[in-house]
Amino acid sequence: ANYEQNGGADGLDQFAKLCSRADVLDLHCRQFGPAFNCIRVPISPLIFSGSYPLALKRLKYFMLECEARGIWVLVTPFGMGPYGDYTSRFHAAGTDVDQANSAAMQTEVASTCTSIAGLAALHPNMLVNTLNELRVVNDATWQTLQLAWRAALRAGGYTQPIVYDGSSWAQHTTTAMASAIMAVDTQSIFSFHFYPENAGGTLESPGVPLASMVSKVAALKTAGRAVMLGEIGISVNGSGAAYTALGPVLAWITAVVDAVGPDCCGMLAWMA
Image (cartoon, rainbow, N blue to C red):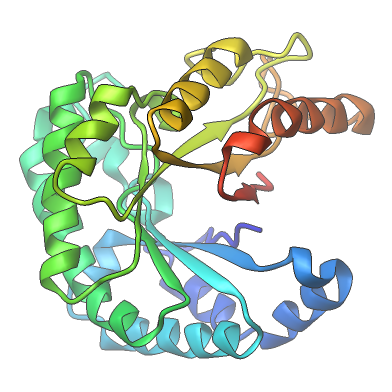
């Protein structure tokens, strides 16, 4: 499952609500049983890179509640909307890439990684995803940023595996990109996000065909890299309208799980 801290100028209010809902955890445990064993929690770099000790306290409470129920928590800094507003702060003007101000973004996310690394060192059920859907225009920049965030986590005492989203909305990770990370840290997992754009079976922007995504996952698996399905779900169709028919939704999710599930070490649903 993915929990989302949507709403609010910086997401802190919704984050507080999330971290006080142990009853929601119990409800999901009853509904899904042992299959419910991991939650992905988005956090805001604007909060966790600054002096917000209450945010860390809330996250620690949530970690303890999950730990007591045998649930893993994948903590992910988000750089969009209420999570950090990278759309205006770190994207090049008029574009959807993070390249132009990557130095500023590198510093802020590294500070976030340092902030949460100490907490993760106390909770073995906590994993960290360096940054959700990093969007850069070349593989070298992706590697530079990811290695910087990896260094911040390790320096802060984090010893668990690190999860890395690929570039281009987590739809692009080559064996060369993964090898650059694995050369310095074998405790690495590479995450892909799958969404349909329309009933024809293509993904949301930039519209990579499912077959291409399956090929990338298989290539990493063949190279001995750990791969996870970090997000799978339904957002909107190609016309921007919400899906209303359950049949196509289930068909799409089934197709993805059947295609890449055997090659993945885990899967998380995102309900957008």
